[in-house]
Image (tube, rainbow, N blue to C red):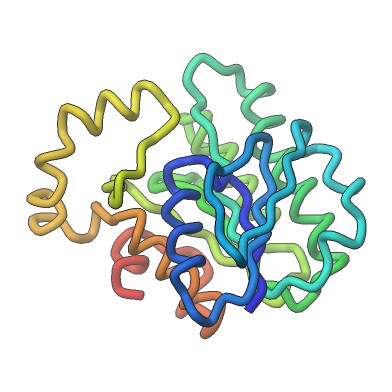
Length: 219
């Protein structure tokens, strides 16, 4: 299986990349991002593209992949709805449309988040934008598009978030996360479980197209 990964330098992306590189069934991983992942491996290739909105310029380099894992994400804190829409909806759809024309047999997996508003009309700005993004992706003619909606994510294997607020959160509550995961397994997952679940979905499909934390952990 040949896999494309967006957001490999982020917390979720680092976990997904780790699982892809460990998986004997993954032949090649192409990581595309604004910055390099910092990882090296015989089956890892990287393209640094500071403006991901120009992804069409990569042309044929985007073709021939079985799955795409999009974990770009970004905080909505301090952003207007228009700015967050450009960062989330516009960029994600630009990437997805460039890929679907070259890889119609691709499984496209998008990391959204718990609380995403599929109606696109709720009071929470980020949830509306994420919901609009999910709905647009589900309408594209991929082999299948699957939305991952994790809630609390426990980073494993030395992985750290690039977002300062999240790093503070994990520093303060990190020791409690294993306990919370045992107490509320439907709300806490790990970077490892997300990566493994993505690989399983890419190979076997998923029971539904929107997966919450409990679904991710079950896979």
